[in-house]
Amino acid sequence: MNYYGGMHFIWWIIWLILLVWIFFIPTDIPYQKTKKESPLDILKKRLEKGEISKEEFEESKKVLNLE
Image 1 (cartoon, rainbow, N blue to C red):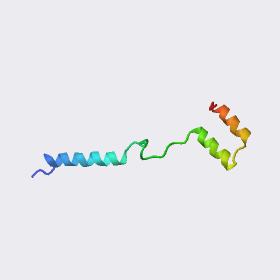
Image 2: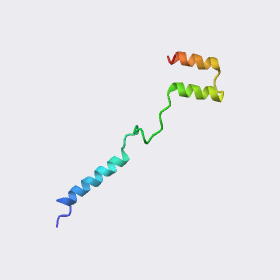
Image 3: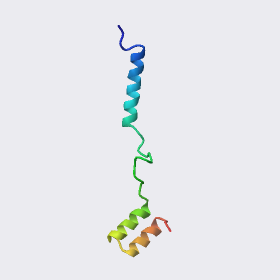
Image 4: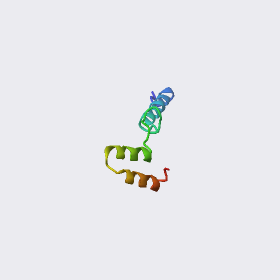
């Protein structure tokens, strides 16, 4: 008997496609990943934490053309 022919071959293909789909899903699916932070969000967080001063914040915004 040939176990790799006919319907058995189709089932191997289905399992292979399923495994490839599971491991290589695109990472930018909106409902699975949190929103990526914009440069302005990162600057605001750094300002809130006190990592940068108000002047550095304003200068960084100018450099990034966020105004």
